Image (cartoon, rainbow, N blue to C red):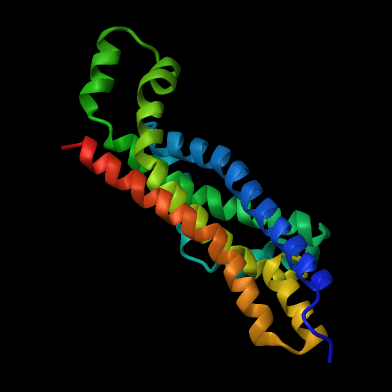
Length: 216
C-alpha cells in the first residue's frame, strides 16, 4: 500500500489545472454565445425570442450529465467522434450559454426603459445604444449572478469524468485507486475545490451587497 506521495499530489494539481481550463473555456465561449442569446431575447423579434427561449428551456431543463453524454456518445453515433476534451468543451459551452443568456437577459431588462426611450429620441442607433449605454450597466448588474454561476460551473466539471476527461475529480479517483486512501485523497480534492469556489463566492456576495447599497 503506497502512501500519499508528492508525485500523486502533483497529479491532482494537474487535474486541477484541467478543471480550471475547462471552466474558463466554458465560461468564455458560453459568454459569447450567451450574449447573443440575451440580445436575441430582448430584440423584440418574436421568432428569435421563441427559438432562444426553446434553447434555454432545453439546456436548463436537462441534466448537465446528459448533455455531456450527448456531446460525446451521441455525436459519435452520427459519425462525429470527438476526443473527451473537445466534447466536454462543447458541452460546457452550450450549458453555460443557456444560463448566462438568461442571466444577462434579466440584467438587460432591469435597465430602466426610459434610458432606451431617451436614446431613441436622440437618434442613437441600436448597436451604439447597447454598446455604450445598456450593456455596461447590465454587465455590472449581472456580475454577482455570473460569478455564482461560475462557481457552479467549476463544481460541475467533475461530471466530465464520465467521458474520460482527466479533471480534478477523476484525478482523485485515479490516485485513490493507487494508494487505497480514499478519505485522504478526496479530502485533498475537496480542499482544492473549496480553495477555488469559496473566494469566488465571497467576491460575488460582496458585489451583491455593494450593488444593493448603491441602489438605495
